[in-house]
Image 1 (tube, rainbow, N blue to C red):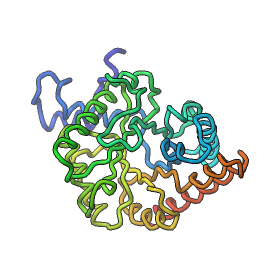
Image 2 (spheres, rainbow, N blue to C red):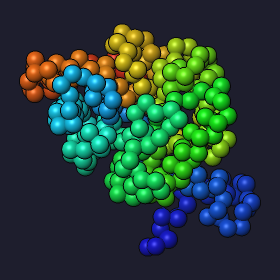
Image 3 (cartoon, rainbow, N blue to C red):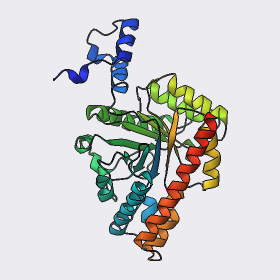
Image 4 (spheres, rainbow, N blue to C red):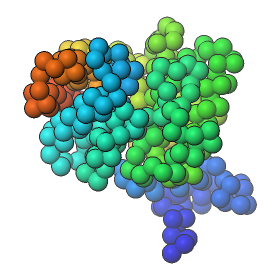
Length: 322
């Protein structure tokens, strides 16, 4: 069975027969390898509603926070996630290993989509968590169901030195993910770097494809115009027809702000859902760490917040299909 993983998908075979041989050593054919990877994934997700609690620096800044109570709080976040998901498809989480190790590993095997961050919080130029290792060998210990999530603060107008340094890290990470059979999520937030317009995300996405980066997932900030979403989705599908899709990040926005963003984004099938955190857990975390609420109240409140946000997304998607 040693050759079984190399067996081609129908899409891969059709691509090969239509295009023909360009590289005699097929394993070195980058286009063919990308189609092989993306059409033979372990699982395809039609939607993902993710509760994000991979926050590290934001939680560490809360008065009274320490690694122990942050870790316990993330376990409560997982309890809220599981309560809302109730074993159904299409739910998930983002959680780190440094402060949320217990919650992260308890999440395994429950059918949840699991994103696990590697970036050092707030870093620009991009640097990674120490656990990844200088040769990125730390990824060899990851469970295959963990999606490698990396956040990069980048902008099309970045200085060449900054662009080159950040792209070098992401390129190495991308190839390390493939070596270890791990999916990769690339999160970009250009608005934290400079002014944005309807084409900012599309330009960044095209640049990553140009240098050979094909993320399985994209995580993008809410965009406020159809033109921006259309340009962004076209930048992805024109280069990678088999991507898993896009998740919307929250940026700490209110439910009302997210509802407006969801309504627009849901019109585009490539957007599979959201990965939102502070809107759900920020107030609860501060109160719980201060000892003002107990575990049960924290879990119940976050579950209700998450459930309500899922309802907002589901309504937006249903409205877009109507």
